[in-house]
Length: 420
Image (cartoon, rainbow, N blue to C red; front, side):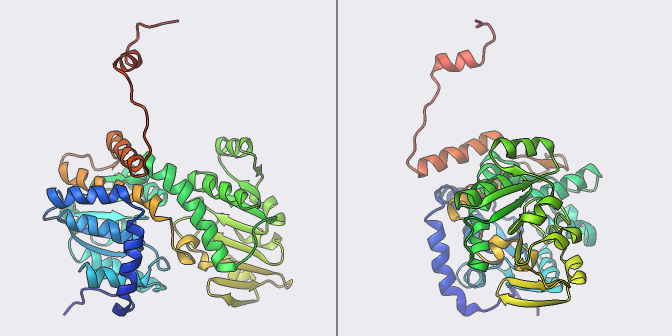
């Protein structure tokens, strides 16, 4: 008989439940959506397979979907991001099947994805597009059963847009990451704070006075650079986009190519969504004791295989620190196996940030259910009206009020007759 879950230890459930409740206190938008979902049941009868980071915030999203009527199952979207106590609580207290164990190997990771797909979902919810890409590549016959999906992160949206451009995407997907209340806040404030948190927890180093190299100046890079400067680091930005590079300069950061930054950097963190951003030649130039981390979705941004070939030895110095000894005797420290350091060594984004991101997920699922069969098989954005409603509810939850347009002002903004 097939197991209904695969988690580390069910006995961790009570501790996980407390942490889930703690996170809920900082998630007023999702809580309001949950109250409505409980009454209206907009997802009734839908089987949903989620491939997300199994965290306290995700647990609150899944509970919201469940109360909305969905039959939910979840697997991990990263081998190191699972919070085992949360996984246990989801199974024990919420009766949600979970296939996720922190530190699971590559084979187990995909076995868990297969287990989620075995439920024959009507809707997918992804963070990195591994669920959708596995479905398309290995189980194409199931695609016709899927009404649509949602995607949480930049990396996943890039993959899905490539699939759509190639005519390979077989059902519509909403790019949650493209919502203003997601990437403006989750990527900037969430990634910025949680990445610093992960690096400090992994190493216990003082960042003040260090040369901190941020690879990539998208929304995640902006947030990380801002927080690193705030803690006293000397921030250097590397970029391939001239517009982003100019913005970094105007924001007061030093900008240079990675091969120059490699010589002077003390701490490096990649947030680009691309591969081999830190490569073999960069490792050859780094200082003794350089610390290298990644906060992009996949562990390809740092070319660890190249480093392993170059190094003459490797030691695990701390739980999330692997020290590679180079032929010269220099040591290069890789954090969290090159995986998302904010989730590998810390707890990911604060709940108040994920409140908006997961509100987007919940409303996207509802929108997809309401428009089943009506949307083109490509990547869509959540309607701006819903995006702004999330911001409105968030402000309300924070006790903040804003102005509204008068009829006269509204008329002025929508007319063309008024001039100088």
